[in-house]
Image 1 (cartoon, rainbow, N blue to C red):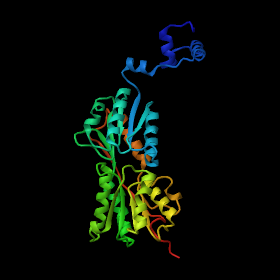
Image 2: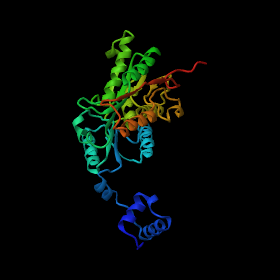
Image 3: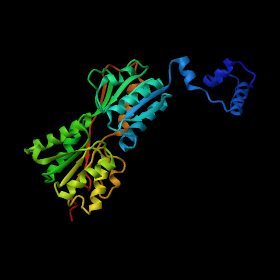
Image 4: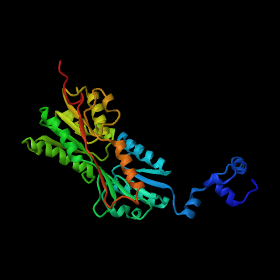
Length: 324
């Protein structure tokens, strides 16, 4: 239709500066009239590069992970790459499924926050153009780069704050301890209690949920509130804490006068709640950019290269009674 060779069409798509403007416009006009869309699959077969990167996180609906994804996307856009994203929702079988789908898509590299640390699950990506970068920790048997935040220290700060406020029965609403950061946050909470000369079994009331969602947070605390078993609640993410707060408000439980509440992540909504949520700040966007930065410079990074971030407790009104 444009009256040019296949090579000229290819240049218009891939190297437009090589084609004189008049010819380029004729080809582009033919494309518009035909509704032509280039085939990524065909280009991938020819170049053996997809320009796609896989990203696997626990929950794309969680504002913390959404911020991580924005950070990854910022770097990916700058490198001319496109993300293909999947959620595991704390389900090991779903993690394996998402990874199989990404493998079939031929992604050039992988960023994963694994809920189950089996490096063999993502071994197929190790030899890809960009390899693998893990979030939260490096799994045993993997030489990939990783980005982490000290979950033990973050939880130690959060639980220590509640104990220092005088609380002696504190619910720890947590996910499965098979998930690395859930186990580490429990470790930090227990550490804070024992450092203060108390027995963890006397202070910490473990409540385990299947998924770290608003609904699970509300469901987890309702029986505790009904029985009056605790004076404070620590949640391992802010979505659980939001659910807990909604359950408390439905019951007329005053926060923090009746029950204090602490979250983890410092999601964007945390300071806007009533009362504002005390939580552990994680630099989500920066963690995402760091992970993507490690991925795209695969040729330069050292085996097992690691970037660590530090948590910071942000004290707000959900855990401290305002002084008159």
